[in-house]
Image (cartoon, rainbow, N blue to C red; front, top):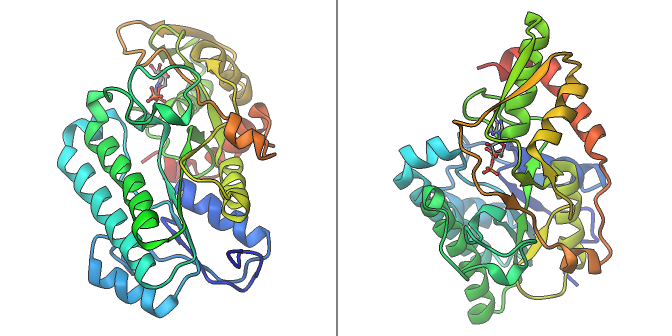
Length: 317
Ligand code: GDP
């Protein structure tokens, strides 16, 4: 086995300050792991190969969660395509190579459901990866992430490493980006409903038709699944992480309205893009291993809203 049962084993969470890495770090600590290592960007530049090598040689993590990535919405992806492909390729290459050299027993690379083809069949099974054309707006990001998966597989084949890639669905949770224009739908709508409630507005605008469907997973469930798979996934190949259910944006908006306690109407702005009509992962591979999500959607949203209210002045930036 991979020594993951040993609670003293050094585990490095790359990206520990982010939404996903933060949740993984919390999950590990809550399970009693005593050596959960994180480094801020100021302390360790993951784009610098020598610095990453030195860090791995010093700390010798037996397990690595590679949750560090340059991420952003459609606007950022369109404006800074070179940054997205370069940063992600560098981070992955440096961490995977250093982990191999330092004898890391197991590394988990976090991919994303948005790197599946634009017109993937639904729900999306793992074998849809590389089966069709990508969404052009985030192609540089997607190609980098796909290269990360291929990197892990290739090291496994050539060097006998144990590097596994997981594919999380759309995530939400405390610590997310709540920017009104650039955030994903849950934090953006929560913020907008909150402001409308305070202002006593009669309606809130939701982008698009309200008809697209999306699957959402709380980051604590994602972290739980990652720890579960780090421990027990013996198989090969990528594995989807989701809850197996999706919701229409109109229904989502109503649920968020109720969580926030806004009494007004919803208006749909059809001039804003709907994006892909449906994005649901096929989670049969994960569920067959016995894992299930635990966070009820309404509870998860309430949890995020509590976090938002407590951090509103930071989140407003
Ligand atoms: P996507 O899965 O990449 O499309 O991620 P998003 O979270 O940005 O959008 C999901 C869906 O929610 C799309 O159909 C959007 O049009 C819709 N949506 C409705 N209101 C908003 C909003 O205020 N912000 C965002 N980002 N999406 C919204």
